Image (cartoon, rainbow, N blue to C red; front, top):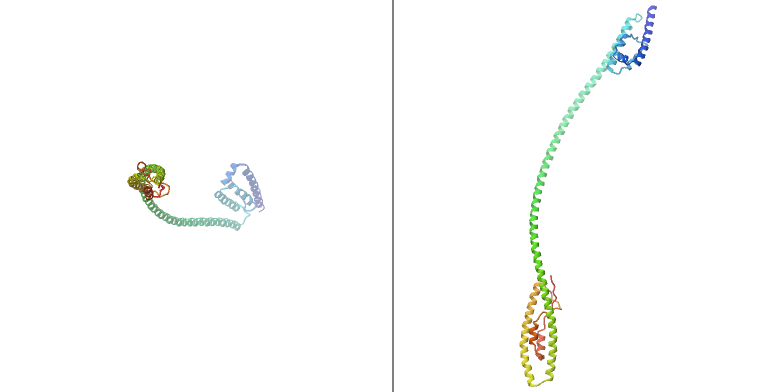
Length: 328
């Protein structure tokens, strides 16, 4: 019994010393780290259940791969169980308990992994259902989008046809306006020519009216001369009463009466010419323009001594009110 305990203590010391050596090599030798990660070197050691947990934890923390870590744990458990079974100081029930605990832990681990797999499987199923629902929703949305696109396309086609129709109407209107503009240009050209001709006619009429005005002024001067001659005739009639002179004056009066008749006709012609000119020029009557009477006939026809008849005749032949020309 004492020999068994001594052997167990000696084996434990060797295990601790081996773990220390293993730690030192693990920290300094990368190749040995890979060896530990592959769990090949760990199987050469026989770990007890007590006193080596932190050493085992240290080694396990050096392993990054979870599957590799699970493999190492399993191999460690098997190595420990083998070591415990070979030790005479451990009772059979303890060995069974340790073995049962190891199997229970392993089963719990398997159950946990199974639960994780089941949760992942359910999550995948839920995700597939959500994707199916999303697929149907997207199909409905795509159908609605296609329907709206068709409606929009039909509306755009109708709008395009309406715009083409409006464009056609505008082009027709532009063509009609172009023709009308051409016609208006031609009419404007004709009106411009007519205006130029009318302006030329107005200038000619103004020149004619200026001539008439000048002639009327000459007529006024001549009438003043006639008045002076009449005054002379009146004076001679007052101072010379001989029968011979009276007979001569009566003869002159007869000649003057004929001349006055001619003057009446000439004045009538002047009035007619005035009225026609007013119609052409659209003139308004004004009191400062006397129309033309044939001065040559007047000067050749009036004698120098015919007072009474010529005074009465001049009163009867008073010319109409003068006119002022207004050109529209």
